Length: 215
Image (cartoon, rainbow, N blue to C red; front, side):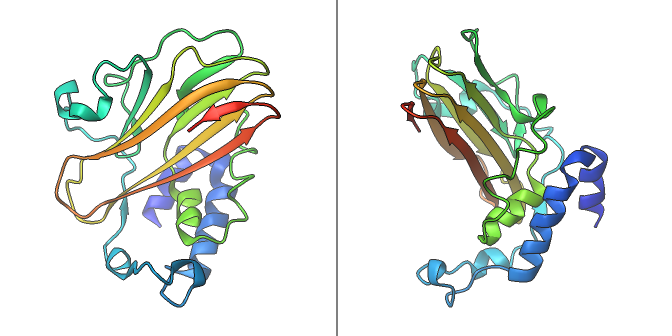
């Protein structure tokens, strides 16, 4: 309840989506081996963790050295880094984009998207998608206009500090690619700790006719 109250203070417009997600999860609970889509995956060990959404950015100081090889060395790419579900500007790097192209993080561009977020995920009966609807904090926002292309590949790096059992980061990516647009998006994950933690990522994508998007 306290977690939900804090989310409401930081974005009342998203509360219908969050409440609907929480309601779906409350009805379904975690999947079991009796569920067709999960009959080969036992999530009971995860379900027993004391899930705690990470609502505040970590105060842990991170540097490029800690990212190691996961940044792909000299790869010429824009990079959006999220630590425990929160955008880290110090570890991210983005170049100027052509007109009609946006590469940023979701929390900085929510205005006008509140009614669109969840349009693709809101009816999903996957319990983990429902949890993401309820608790997501940030994510990538990539918009490519008709006939436009990303200036460079975009690398999305999701870092888990894994400082305590049950820490859960919820990330929502929003990608819109217009007709005949082009771009490459790379996604990778890095855990810095040994604790049992979860990074729950949901990506909503709208891809136009003739678009060439590699993810």
